[in-house]
Length: 125
Image (cartoon, rainbow, N blue to C red; front, side, top):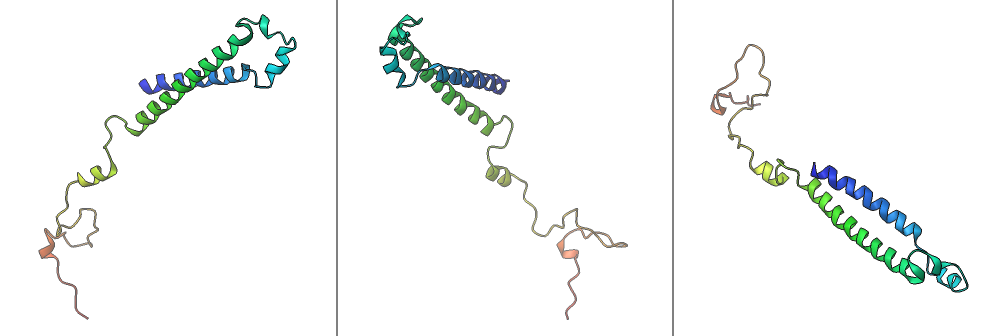
């Protein structure tokens, strides 16, 4: 549930960053505005849009970065999973050294030995 909310937030923030970057003027646009480019008649004034948009872009970039870390943390630490591969292997039940595994095939007409002492020795050649 939390993962889905953070993923939707990530998409919205990334689209916001894309829109803000595309709306901003480049550094070379200032020279054209000095000769009557019409920037002084904009909603934010002649200098206000650059500060507003650059600050908003920086805030959205910070949110994007923190949200990416949170999503990575959630994916790396799912609930109910073993903490690590090493801990899951070391917590497995130990097998007796002389026990014959149950999935070893037994020849027809014989029964599986109860323990390793019942196994006949291999013939000497």
